[in-house]
Image 1: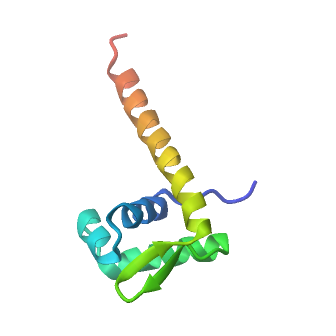
Image 2 (image 1 turned 180 degrees about the horizontal axis):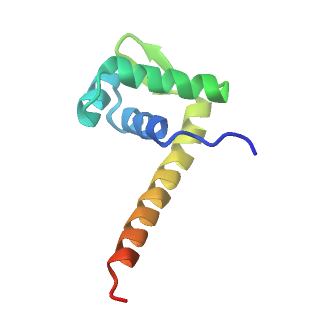
Length: 94
């Protein structure tokens, strides 16, 4: 089975996509900017695709980044749904 995507890297990626900045994403995630950069670089290395073009402090999604962004939101949403569902199941009376 091929390796699966790391949820922390996906969260860093989707946060950068949403806020448009590694620095702002780091602040929102309570991480250092370096940690966010490493997460994105690791994801790019793992996938073999550049996800952003970097223009000074501004970032833009590449075509590969746009492809992943659409799927990453769905993946993270499903992960949250699974967490919420299992927690509700665990609280149910026997």
